[in-house]
Image 1 (cartoon, rainbow, N blue to C red):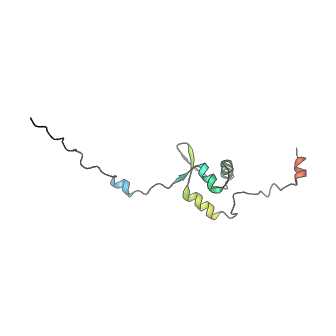
Image 2: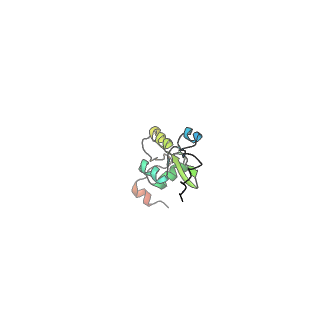
Length: 104
């Protein structure tokens, strides 16, 4: 009695990728708020404030989480005219420390 060899795979050789998928460009990297804050050397709360004041690009929602495209963040850093993320507001002048103590 002889054993029959294992039949070859009927599906043929495995394919690496669908032809259309290989033509797609890869998705750009998305950054979390922690990564953005680290790049800007500010806190995550500062990033949130900047977005709220329209001083920084709004994030995209990805599965309920906020993400920024890396290219958008790098472009914003390159075009930031002040060179820093702090924005001293002209509407709130700096008061000497002794005057600040007397505020209500």
